Length: 344
Image (cartoon, rainbow, N blue to C red; front, side, top):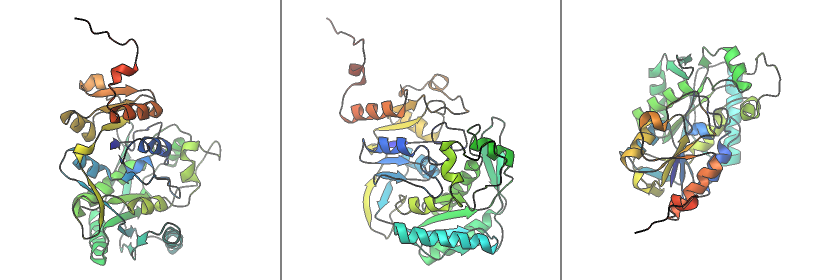
């Protein structure tokens, strides 16, 4: 089993747009029994393409898993609840058509959504290093809606909100491939908050994708085209949550249970090695495969952190080869030349 992380809001050249890390995730998944990855890796609004062995897990739950604090209980299927922020009727109509399409096409069990009585007011914020974070003005509105869904029988929660304070010029730059996705940070805050509160899988998507932008070219960077081609970001998270792992034993049937002792390696871009999964991998002596080709706006490298278990790979294709070598007990030194000769 491998953990594959594409951090959100830091401008990953692969995976920092709209599901554009999906081919790399599916490649890595083909080498192991399970590939754990965060939603940012594969979410692309109307589009999502997960191999059956991809474990779609919220970021904070991955941190807990990598720390050895929880197991992942892999369900046959979850019952998905949906929180919709108070919005105009025409927006709600669009969402319900999308919800019914996901039910009809993917077979996801979605219970009656909760439309909040008050706005949630989720906001984008860009920090001093250029990464996007966020804030939520009315978290109690989210929590109350989550409690209502759980009482209805939900054991996974999707959230869709109107993200505020989203500068159109920044979003236009994002679609040109020139800056990180500005929505990712605030999405992570909401999903972390709700996962900590309710201990179930959670994911967030923008209610409607922004289209009224001053674009140099109406055909956007291919990596973000899934978002531009979709009306809402919601469909992918509803599909992803269908089989997202539970972090505690539930009443539903469980297909498998996995824990940190099953992890063969952690894969991550080479300039963002400061996260919990990487530091915990050092603790558990799990190899970290750092992919140079996936550039970010950060500079948190092996040399700066003095990590001992990092293996650099140029590309995800090379990372897949390294995983196969580790899986088959092939010492990596034997794959390169010169090969040291042992002598008495």
